[in-house]
Image (cartoon, rainbow, N blue to C red; front, side):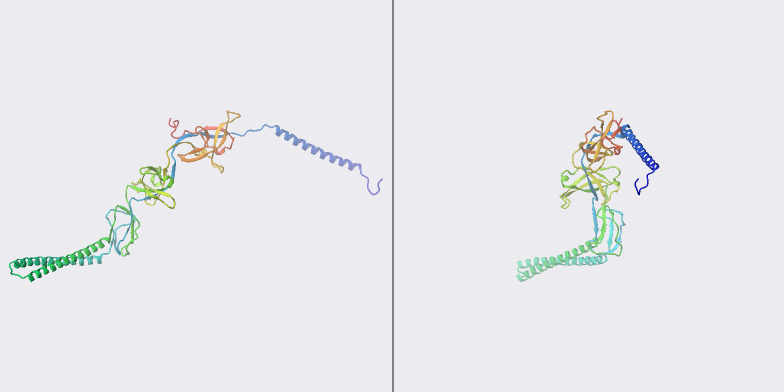
Length: 409
């Protein structure tokens, strides 16, 4: 018997054995249940990925002409800012803002009372000068007659040489006075014409039929020489449309070439416009060449300064592969389409094959494919967003493309 330690009771030993055995049974049961579950999961049949239903179209060939998207500016056939050539006070304004004025119509009258008074004075001076000229002509005629008589008398020895010389001197003086009177008359007439011109310049007329700009001139206002009065834009059935071509494309433009223009005021559809001229030089900053075209404007919907989109061809028409725009998916790694091809393991099934492509211009809802796709290959259109590489596919046919033979049946 060991001293200092109490004896172990048999009942406590039995209880400990029972507890340990129970724990071992529970642990074994849990292990068996987990093992059976793993086996069942391994033996369970796997379910395949459900196929996606997408619209499938065939890539087709379409004629395409490369074009450049340009910005055009509307310019009037004739445009001028009417200015006052001479100073003066505004007497009358005979136009309203935005009104259409006819060629020769009076637009502005400056006060010309001073010039008109000076003109009357000069006209009187002209009459005086004309009278002086008439007197000088009479003196010349008298002097010429005196010489004739003295000459005859001198031949009959009834007159001296001194009298003949005096008559000739008088004739020369009369002719000089006549020349002076004629010069004075011309001077007076020139001064009168100058005043008439000054008065005429104080009445401003429209040089052509035009639409007037905003009116900022009023009676009583003083205008210095060169002051702008109003801007005039010609009213015509046609109007210029200018745009700039890059220097590498400028050699392709020529007078008579047709380009397309689009703008809300031109209607829903693009309209053809004709190139009439090219600038002789390129812009030294942009290296673009200015091209002038002409466009119909019968309803006056285009106004100078408006912006119009211009589509200019820069190469001959080409045959290109096209697909609907919704068939092309955009991604950071590049544009791509999903080509629908038979499954290698099950030819009766179809799968999506991702194909990187290089795209071009848009043609009536279709995208030009420059690289990566051949005509006749089938691609996913509507519903292509649901696909990923090697995804199973159920094909549904797309409606025929506009203009195709099947669409016209």
